[in-house]
Length: 278
Image (tube, rainbow, N blue to C red; front, top):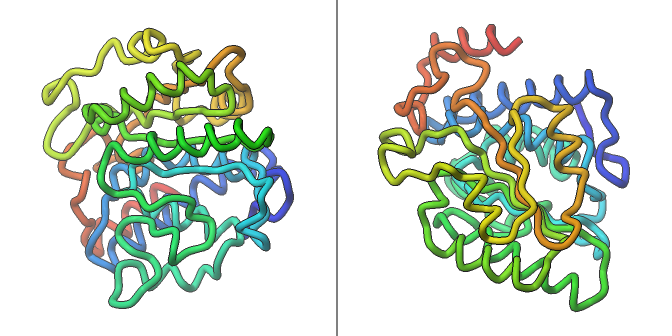
């Protein structure tokens, strides 16, 4: 399966988008099991967002990853690297056989994305709270250049407990960055517990509105809703899409369980998961 060869985006049909998300999930799980490392719960919750971005929304050309007119995407929740690498590979940025090297010695596929190693990676992420500030800088640069490319950033919800995100949000609103879209993977779980038991975020959409973002809240696994929400731009300032998702989405024994933030399936569990995801 290969998608995303056209510019803009992959131009996938609804059926192809569903297949794309399914393959991202299966690939990410296989990578985690092979490496015995990773964050499979968040990989699965983000898969539909990534599929819609690369299959329908983003303007890019995998043959020219440095093309000046491309849209920029920043994976702020860098621990979801396996699903991101799967998305990039399926979109044609690098051969799919490289996925088997995930987190191996000297592999280009680090545990967190590195823009110096892989085409299609726009920013090094991993320390949480860094991706949105970087994306705000990108959006400012486009405005200064009078360029029409857009910037999208995917954050985790637990990550929003970092104050650097809200400093960046204030700047984005002040500068009226209509070319910036923030997507929150709102799966309500972080390492160890639910977000609301750790440092409560609700009412999250209202917080973004208070910071000056045009904000919509949707089902983050409804691909039609994602296409509509991510294709629109802010009218007077930046845009936020709060995507309500399920950690471990698609695998019954992983869904909505905090332990699967970084727990690795056994061989038997992987077989069960792949069967469910088929």
